[in-house]
Figure 1 (spheres, rainbow, N blue to C red):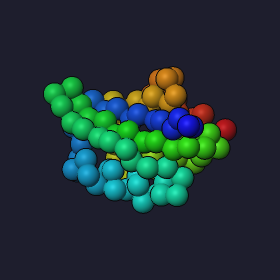
Figure 2: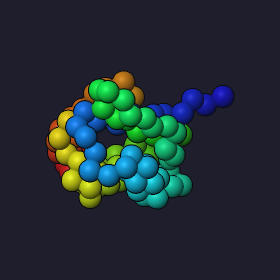
Figure 3: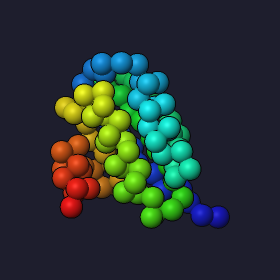
Figure 4: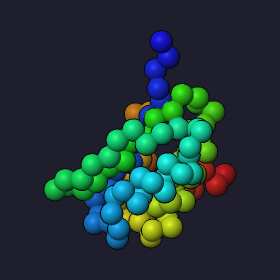
Length: 98
């Protein structure tokens, strides 16, 4: 059985909107490529978990997730765990634009 690939998005700053808006926005943009498989909030921040099956979809999913975060002006205190490697939002955004 094939194991899903994953991206975990972590944020430490308060959100300007409900986490459900972020989840829905990302899902609408990655539907067909991946899925929002979980999310949560706590004392230390919030997270959105994404899963997908094709490694070819990684960049597309990252680009769309970053676009949603920027749409809601969520740029501080955000990091991404992509297959076990951690990236801050600025670092990831720069890599995706190359």
